[in-house]
Image (tube, rainbow over all chains, first blue to last red):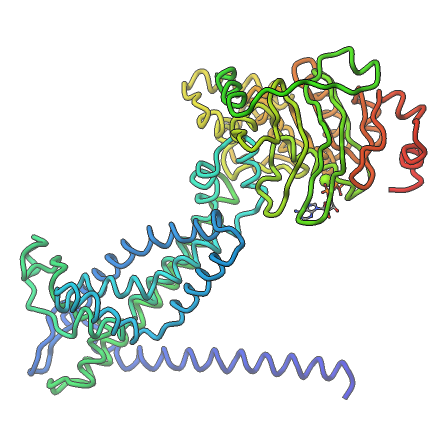
Length: 295
Length: 279
Ligand SMILES: Nc1ncnc2c1ncn2[C@@H]1O[C@H](COP(=O)(O)OP(=O)(O)OP(=O)(O)O)[C@@H](O)[C@H]1O
Ligand SMILES: [Mg+2]
């Protein structure tokens, strides 16, 4: 075999690996969407789930998923930004920094069920809150924070050094340069990363099982007083999310249409995650265009 | 405004006795900067070795020398840009009025407002031409619309750019040509009304026409500012500068009037370099 043939063979091998992965992915998503598609009616998406009878929906779970995501991001983004700015701009190259970096990496690779157990210990028992939305959001923050710190740090580091020097050489202070030059330049990267992380959070189940719980009280969607126990906005109530719902109907559902509900929920979940990913790409390229084309 | 920041720079350091150790003709003018035993290290590597000389006010001083001889490092120590590089360290004294710029207590932001810098590659912000001009002004407390506009026009005119951009001030600065971008960088630095302007090979990426525009510009600007320019272009140095410093391996080999250095160098290394025998 000469070198040209070897080259062709390598090309062939890599193409077929890529094709295999793509086919697998499309097959999986296609199958799930195909299975779940018949369930995707407005009624299914908006009505509350039922415990025993067929025909329940996923209305509260869908709402919980989005609400808990918003809460999580509310905690994660400022903390992640702070950590990312520290790591990219202030941390010196020393032992302490490398220790912090190792901690972040370990935290990022922690199995989410472990985070769930930690959440149970701290946000459920220690605080005495029981299973709550806020407990779930805090557990998800622990789950998501290392990723967010990484995203912010990387985005800031990828801003060309010249930009920072330009700003400093004009007599701007370090912090003002970060605020007015580095962060705006890093914004597209941070936003894209945040949206991708949102997709991950949206689909997360294990760390919520023992924190936000696997039940949802009957919600009154006409009551928007966050302190009322039947209000959807109440953060101190159990909140089963969509991903958790898939797990719970499958393992302990007593309804006759378990399969259909699970398929429908899975399809919704996959679609949501897909939308998050596409949104991240779309907004990312839009911002990139806007920044490179005109101010 | 200006004198206020000057005060800030001064307050930060103790006065130090001035010491000028220059060749005769250079002594006649007031010195803008005096370097005494300046050493600069990157970790253990020493990039600038025992440099002592001084540069006069309102004149152009050129720094020449082969690649890697420490010109940029030296220039960047003046406005303390080397502070941003981990492991970089400077010793010695850079006397500016009555402060030592290398002092630990120097307020670097105030210092950089008075000693502006233009880099080799244009480094505009991804904003409009107008926003690039006023970005630092606003930080330094100039916020009046009229005052800002006045300064923008004044400095763009000084940088010989006004006619070319006056109708597109709110378009992206990145849509300008390379030469225009570099002149905008100069205008942006001028807007802070610095006393000294440091330029690190500002023309190396430019075509001959932009190049000569910037050279003309600098000759005009030296009426008002002290200019220190690093250049690889020997013709440029001889055309525009009043005195020239030749660096080799971090050492200041020769410093004298530009005419003299190019026609009658004292050191053999200088002669070899300017006649193109190495570097
Ligand atoms: N950030 C840095 N870290 C470590 N060493 C550096 C750094 N920057 C420059 N040096 C070293 O310091 C020496 C002087 O570099 P400097 O950039 O000042 O040279 P220069 O005269 O400006 O060269 P050129 O004409 O190519 O721009 C070189 O040996 C270089 O390798
Ligand atoms: Mg250089």
